[in-house]
Image (cartoon, rainbow, N blue to C red; front, top):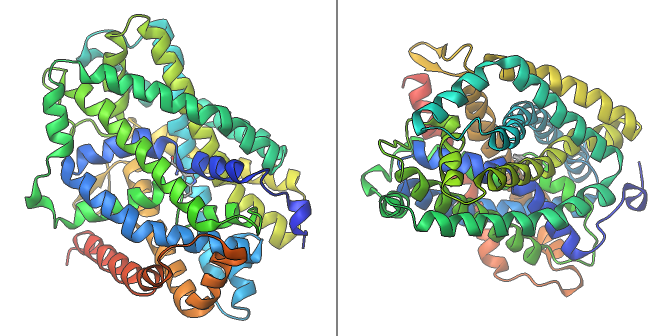
Length: 457
Ligand code: TRP
């Protein structure tokens, strides 16, 4: 077992927050969130999403960070150390697998954003709205290109991970995060002035309460919340394992949640006003192409729009890479800590394996638009992956983490870790209540409600 020192720790508290926020902020916020809002019927989805983030995910984020810092090892070892001789290590193993599977589709989408840096500059996506939307469909159907770009993303990720924890992740994120926020604020301000923007705001902020109890909305929002916070599979456990004992977990967790949620909400304030300024825009019909159809229209209204577009997609690709780093780091940390592999071998073998998993995702987009998963349920491959991993695997992981902390490790132990050296941790009783009762019960109900239509019962 490597000592905590040789594994590396974060350079500073700000460094940890930036790195964890770098993991959280990514395609999930800027590509995933608006897409899911579009499919979930607008403001009602936003409402349920915020409930999931603050009531269900924040307590679990705190739990994950505390577990990771307590044991200072990879997720599988975390469970095996606290509950030796039990099957709890399987929760860590589920996380390692989920990390690889999510990365396999994530790198393909990140590859699309790289392509759009070039398409913005070359003017390929500056035509009329219908043509820009059709361009996305044609581009993603050319699977070879998408696969090559996805491989490029994986290789850059692997290269950064070979450099170790601190120098790689912290440095990139420090510059990236403020730049991304600034550009997004500018774009949101521009979108505010577009004709039709008011319809966009109404769609985004005035909930249709009749859909409030739609299980699909809840399941989508919960999956999206877990995904956006990089939660439920040990990423935050792994990052917490590099956190110094002297740093407060409560404050760090709150920062990560506030940053991540602000970026997601801000993305909506860009996409929906811009979208509704396009005649005939239907947010529910666009699917994964939503931001790739809407954003070029927004850039076209800006002087020097090609440059703005290129800069935006470049920052988005970089934000995606600070997330892919954290996805790959989970299986890598596991191979190093639990199997004693050298870092180099772990990175190379796992990158290669994940690329093989990415191939079907890249090649099936567009080429196989729908296929039948269960009788009567035709969904495309990307939606299938998102359903399995985001909507089921992550919440199930989160549920098990809540139960583990609440009933196996026990909240007293967790609270001792959370308040170590007098760290700021408000509302410990509320947190105990949420982690033991509210999180497990609510997540279980949402998972069961989401399963029923799939199983036809
Ligand atoms: N949270 C990232 C995003 O929103 C994606 C991500 C990184 C992730 N690490 C994760 C998702 C771990 C789930 C689990 O883009």
